[in-house]
Image 1: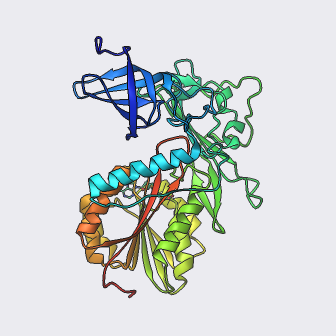
Image 2: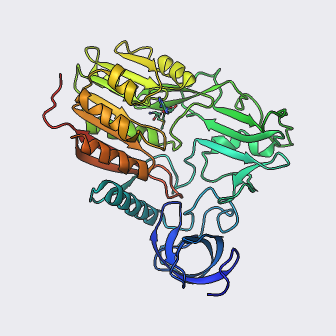
Image 3: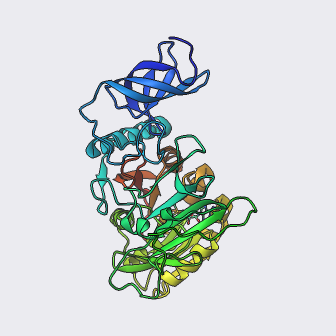
Amino acid sequence: MDPVRVGTLVELDVGAPASGGGFVARAPDGRVVFVRHALPGERVVARLTAVTTRYLRADAVDVITASSDRVPAPCRLAGPGRCGGCDWQHVDLDVQRRLKAQLAADHLAHLAGIRCRVVVEPVTGDVGGLAWRTRVRFAVDGTGRLGFHQHRSRAVQVVGRCPVAVPEVSATGVTLSRWPGAVSVEVHAGDVSPNREDTESSATVVARRRGRGALARPEVEPGAVVDRRLACPPGSVFHEVAGRRYRVSAGVFWQAHAGAPAALVDAVLQGLAPASGERAVDLYAGVGLFSGALATAVGPTGSVVAVEGGAAACADARWNLRDLPQASVVRAAIDAEWVSRSMGPADLVVLDPPRQGVGAAVAGALGPAHPRAVAYVSCDPASFARDLRALLDGGMVLTSLRAFDTFPMTEHVEQVAILTTPGAAAR
Ligand SMILES: C[S@@+](CC[C@H](N)C(=O)[O-])C[C@H]1O[C@@H](n2cnc3c(N)ncnc32)[C@H](O)[C@@H]1O
């Protein structure tokens, strides 16, 4: 191969999916190449985008032999050197799910020693993999225009309407405005449900300042929609899931896919099969999504403790669970010590940690609580697999595993594992 440096063109035969949205190929010198915008089985011309002693990165810029799984990207900004937001716009939607299943199964095998077939299920709430994202974080370029970072770059690809976002995000008009002084602008659109209180906004917008500089209010350009739908903080949106309404304040976590909350609540309830009178603990509870559903299921003789570290999320959770006396909210930074000292016994535990997972120490500390069943919800296959290993090492048994396509057009996937403790029965 000619000089191996960024920009060099190489011909590659493309293989299995890799974490990070690319696919594995081998350079002529034997180094692994992570190739984006390609598909397994393809022969492509790729431009190197990163060179290290151990591996290379590349973008497929020309397809010599195309896979039958390749489709025209629905977004005109997808492709090498453009928007870094979606890795798999060029992949047939069913095939995206098969590739995610393969990635998830590989992580489980390599990091947890679990060999199982993973099936990635679609969820309702998108249109052919588009129009699903209820929350979008835009980057801001030097002139205050909104867009998304290019792949592994600080450069911003300016966007008008993002086809992956729900239409209510675009309807705020944020991308028509300039946001000088902001480093990011996050829009969160709520359900436009018929019983929504009219006084509440249907979208919140949180602009974060660049450093300590001033954040100018957007200069609204002609055509921008800036009315009560656009609430510069503070503000809240509302979502309805399984018959309950959840308030989510600006900047507080909520699942990004419009259909994810209902799919995940259903999977957790099905897996845990909560019985009347049981005690449940919802760790990393956010605004109380799983707590609300569990509290209804265990009924007034049971109890649910929602544990969450964020003050604003706790305030939302208290509001969301206010009609359920069997539910309480505890603000705590969850770690192994908190679990050992403060959690107490539990029949059921939900774990829905951030991307980095719960870690072996927290997983190990759950054992003495002797839960009948644990539901582990995760959007990160690597930390999920490592934490499952720790829970299995602590004596739990994996009884079911489901995966959901809550991030179409990307390599990401949401998984729900149900684990049980042999011999543990409802208290
Ligand atoms: C992936 S979100 C899940 C939220 C909720 N279960 C849902 O589905 O809407 C993770 C939550 O854990 C919280 N969190 C992160 N680290 C935490 C910690 N060490 N202790 C308590 N809460 C934490 C975050 O504030 C966030 O609300």
